[in-house]
Length: 57
View: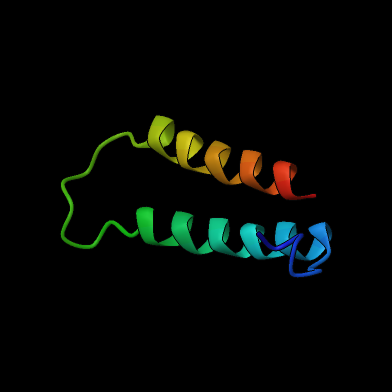
């Protein structure tokens, strides 16, 4: 794990936050996708990254 390697939890949480931003950007790209309400999906994606960041911090 990152802790075993000596990586501070806050740094891991910051990395997870950047991955969250990238995932939401990709998921929100509507090029070639049928329009619809994806707010529940975006919320679910965000919550996974929030929990991962909280666990690492």
